[in-house]
Amino acid sequence: MSRTTRIFCASSLSDVATQVAAIESGCFAGAARRVLLFCDDSAVPEAAPAPDGLPGFAALRDRFDEVLSWNEAIRPFHPAAWTPRSEDVPLLQRHLRRLWGLGDDRVELVLGRPDVPPALAVGQVFTGAPVHVCAGGLTGYGPTRGKLDPLVGTRVRQVLHPDLVPGETPMLLTEFDVPARVVPADAFLKVTGEMAAAVDDLPPIPEGAALLVGQCLSALGIHAPGEEDDLHVRMLLAAAGRGHRAVVFTPHPAAPARHSRALRAEAERLGVDLTVLDEPVLAEVLFEKSRPALVVGCSSTALFTASAFYGLPVVRVGTEWLLERLTPYRNGSRVPAVLADALLPGVEAGATQDALPAGELTGLVTALGFTMRPEVHPHLRPVAERFLARHAGRPYVRRWFARRRLTSLGLPGGIPKQLAFLPRNSTARRVVRRARALKRTVGGRR
Image (tube, rainbow, N blue to C red):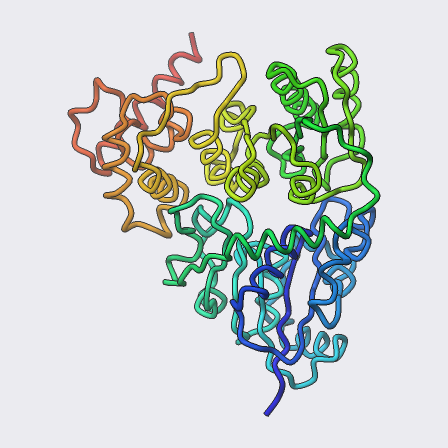
């Protein structure tokens, strides 16, 4: 009988940490060989450090028999944009089996989100291989991005996830009836503790400092780099407004170095002692090593690990601003932004503080998933209608759900009140759309 080789496909050190925690928790059956396949899907992967050069990776290296590079295997294609043509798959699989010494091994895959490259491409190349999905971030609570090829989706055995939002189950791949399984928090904390012990070259972090968790939404095309600078400055202002005179900024690994310039200038103006970490360090490593007095971010997963796993105080900054700019509506970053806006406290002047009533989070996530992917989850329409009808007119509904989207789907909150008497059918919705288009046309001619 051939041996089993399990290939762990990871795009970040955070992915690796979650996968190792799943290994330690017994989430996988035994395998003769474990391979870490690192897929750097940053904008310029050639400029990024190799995984074995990342702070803390040395503590995880011994869990794998070999570390391979997906980037090297598919060069010159970019991992974030390339998927194989169907006619090339047999040849590619034979090539990779020879290149990676797989021979006739039975291959199993552990992927991040299997609906987007590079994980999608790996799943397509190894046809027939059982798939385990390790969803380490908040996007797993949202729907699958588009209609995933059943040749991939039906091979998924389980969705593994840390319990970032207690009581909520990921929506990812539920259309294939894939069961979800929690990666225990103590296993995750054990792994990050080992990583923190292996990192000894960080600059001294002042006791009681606030930690700013940077994001790189500009790399996703959500907004311009200059706006991202403004977001980080707003984080600094929020920390200073809470009385913190010592602040540490950890940039997103994909962020350009220039992001820290605006922060340094603002810190000098405010008289704040700012420490900028030049190396990309996992935020959880900083939680372990320094126990910051406050964690400030926008919609980063680190805010939820800080709160749920480490018991640290957290605040959100800029979620309303982000939600206004997210396009298209089904952008995968919408779910993290809504969860942060709904569950975490805001501190900025003018930040909306109206709270989602207790027990309504599942309804919110379900309604959000339906409006993002109605063609994938049509059976969720009644749940979405009930949630939106219960919360009609609330400010948070207007932030989380685009009115134009609700109108196009014929959902409560979309059709203007003066037209609410119209039945919610396709003909009525078509008439409303035409009336609005005519109004815009006539208004533009005046």
